[in-house]
Amino acid sequence: MKKTMRFRPAVESVSALRSGYQPGLRAVKAEYRDRFACDDPRRLAGSIDIDAALEAALPNAPRWDYGIGVDHGRGGDKIHWVEMHPATDGDVKDVLRKLAWLRTWLQQNARHLLAMTAKEKGFVWLATKAIGFRPGSPKAKQLEAQGLGFPCRRFRIPQDA
Image (tube, rainbow, N blue to C red; front, side, top):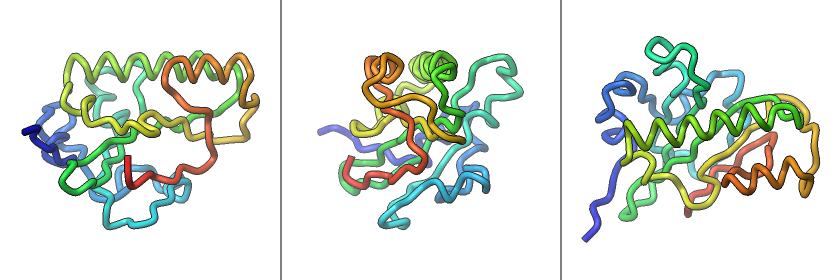
């Protein structure tokens, strides 16, 4: 039988992230919290500001922003990895670089967190300003090829991922 993982102990088991766990969306900067919607906030298993947690150790790395844990009952918790970033076609390269960094860092340092990534909307780009390219464009296809959806202005956290 497969062991189910819970977000908080999984995050706290990674020494570099240990002190970064926050309940609900508290790890998300206040200016961005209204960009998240959750039908049942009690199902939020917590959040982590990866950028802040790793800034001192990896100051020049293209760090990803957040991990948001969602309780899926017996299925364990799932994580949505969220990047807050401007969304022009010129930003696609930067965000894809951050995504590659995140995947590599998780693979090398926290495989169990990578394994907890939600199947639906596991990697999310939340646009901090207007979105400057269109769905179906070559840049949007680049994102899709890397498993990153089209940028959104608001993220409704799936509760059944």
